[in-house]
Amino acid sequence: MIEIVGIRFKDVGKIYYFDPDNHLLKKGDKVIVETTRGVECGEVAMENRSLDNKEIIYPLKKIIRIATDADLQKVAENKEKEKKAFELCMEKINQHNLVMKLVDVEYTFDNSKILFYFTADGRVDFRDLVKDLAYIFKTRIELRQIGVRDESKMIGGLGVCGRPFCCNSFLGEFQPVSIKMAKEQGMSLNPVKISGTCGRLMCCLKYEQDAYTELLKNTPKIGAIVNTPDGKGTVVDQNLITGILRVSLSKSPEASPKNYNVSQVKVIKDAQIHLDKKEIEALKDLEDK
Image 1 (tube, rainbow, N blue to C red):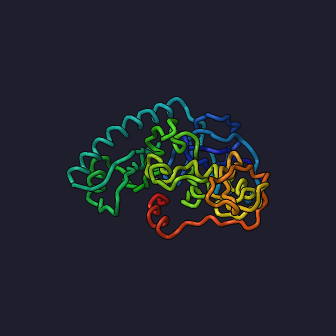
Image 2: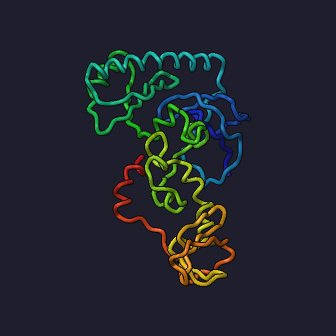
Image 3: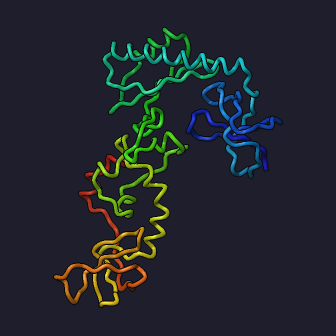
């Protein structure tokens, strides 16, 4: 077992483990640490605790110090510098006629590097832009192309549900979301219905999937052949949440389907949920990051 502390560098970002180096830290404390990007100021998101060595990615770097008032003042100054750097970068992008959208700018705590995040539909030759920025700021410059999901996480906004984006509120990391999940959850495969503001599949499809997977184990799928109190029939619709099935009875196929609770039927032959090639082709772009 080894003692660690979890540090986060963005409000809703990934948590990284560090050696507390005999500091007893509380959630919300600001600390100065060394990262692969340089010296950074982070916030304690996970207080001191012991973890199994197998859960640690080595080398485990130590906390340099608890942030002082002077450190916090420098962080505030860097935020102001980032605003000016954003404006200057936008000017240079326009001068070079580059087809890219600048999303965010970050200074490392020690000002050893400035990171510019952008989105673009394809590859962008930004070598001349980097030269201009390096000449202006006299420090290392990194331009990093990000996906539309990352853009939404950085900028924030309101989702179709009327609440702040999940990615900007509480989701530390993105998880793969698939069209199959939407299909299994009985959603209409209309891009407008199943995609978020970023234009990709809604993140909530992922963290609700476990519940739907469990419900599907005990619920006949559409197309299943079942026995009902009124005889054999075929499931033509289902509501996984309420457990209500609509069944077309074999003895009266022209009649309207009847409703049954899942507990009232017995499966003779279950059906399979599958996507046809046309559905996959039409919606594949929604799965891309």
